[in-house]
Length: 140
Image (cartoon, rainbow, N blue to C red; front, side, top):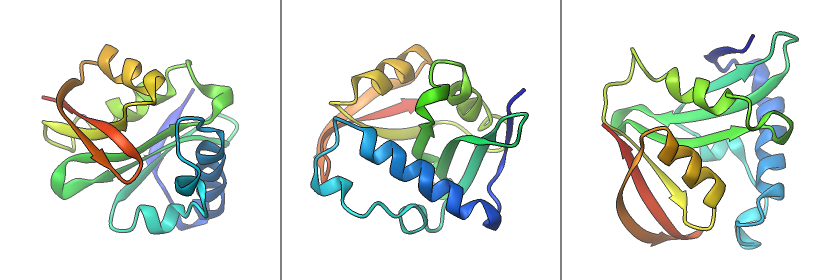
């Protein structure tokens, strides 16, 4: 059983470790983007949620910029990918965050793009940012 909850201050070290793991394992991220990943700085002002296993392990995270209904980060530990954790994190938006929701996904991250598309997210824009070309996706 996976529990989705707001992150606590006591989760900070674990969240930083999970964020670093994701950044370093991402073959689609440029090397400059992998330099000194700082989760706390990256998510300042955002609501952060964690996916916690029944054993208490944090296996995923999501950060949301509430004012813009924007999902900034959604990461699941590699050992737990493909098991519905990302879906549960996104589903947790229902009931507290009005739609439409938006997120950006680097075009080279084809696995994530496929995941979002199967969950009903629609491509609304293509642009380029500091991590390269990206898609702006929306779920209405």
